[in-house]
Every structure is written in C-alpha cells, then in structure tokens.
Length: 166
Ligand code: HEM
Image (cartoon, rainbow, N blue to C red):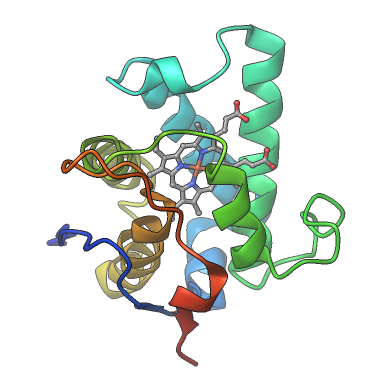
C-alpha cells in the first residue's frame, strides 16, 4: 500500500471516483466501517488537528456516528446518511460542511495521515488494491475541503469543481 498524497492547487478541477462497494464489503459492512471510522476519530483526538473537533465527548461521539454513516452510504451501502444531506448530493453536502472550518493543506495532510494510520490498523485484512481505491477517493476529494492557502488567500471550492468520474 503506497497511499500517496499529492498537493492541492487553488481552484483546480478535482476528478474523483466514489469508493467501490467492494471496499465496503471487504472492510466488513456497516460494522467494519464503523470500527475503521471510530478508530480514525480516536486517532484524530490525539492529532495536530484535534482542535478542529468538538472537545465535548457527547458532541464528538455524534461526529463519529455521522461520519461513519456518510462513509457507509458513499461506498454504496445503506442510505443511512440521506437525511443528514437533506436531499443534496453527498459530495456537494460534504464541501459545504467543511466550508465552516478554515482548512489548510497542512491540516489536510494531517487528516489524510491519520486516516492512513487507521487504515493500516483496521483494514489489514482488505485486498490492498481495494484500500488503494478507497484512498484515492479520500486523497482527491479532500482537496475540495482546503479553503485557506499559504499565500494568505481564502478560496472555497465550488461543487462545479468536483468532477465525479464513473
Ligand atoms: C475526503 C475528505 C473528507 C471527507 C469525506 C470528510 C467527511 C466528513 C464527515 C462525513 C463529517 C461529518 C459531517 C456531519 O456532521 O454530518 C465531517 C466533519 C468534519 N470534518 Fe471532514 N471529511 C474530509 C476531510 C476533512 C479534512 C481534510 C479536514 C481537515 C481538518 C476535515 C475536518 C472536519 C471537521 C472539522 C468536521 C466537523 C466537526 C464538527 O462538526 O464539529 N475533514 N467530515
């Protein structure tokens, strides 16, 4: 598993593919995805980007639940995040959710690095090619969450910059 990170460029068009259902099955369905994402958030709590997230335990738990539901649905599992997205395309809603936070490239790299550690811990039984495909979604799509650039500019990605390849 190489799980590389490529840099974001302000305003670029980002091509991505939603993760495959096969990854969802291989990780162990709803239960396996929950185990991965709960572990991810436990690691986030110890990371350099912990301050972005609620410090209140109950609120933090709610984020864990919603985050797991999102990943279950985006992988083609049951539509358990549907209500949260209020009928919007899930990826469009995700861009909006992140607009409320000042996310830099450095924070994105920390987020991805934390996810890489979680995958190494909780997806070791999954075919590495499937892990790589899941990673590609995260690595590409996360570029659209970065809105604070090193030149001091703030730039919020529009959904029109998100090109879902099928
Ligand atoms: C592929 C990229 C990403 C995906 C799919 C993703 C997904 C999610 C999801 C599903 C939620 C929960 C939304 C809800 O409340 O229903 C969330 C919240 C959040 N994410 Fe991300 N995320 C991504 C990248 C990032 C990055 C790079 C950061 C960098 C810091 C980040 C920071 C946050 C924060 C701060 C919250 C909200 C916590 C709160 O509501 O207090 N995310 N994300």
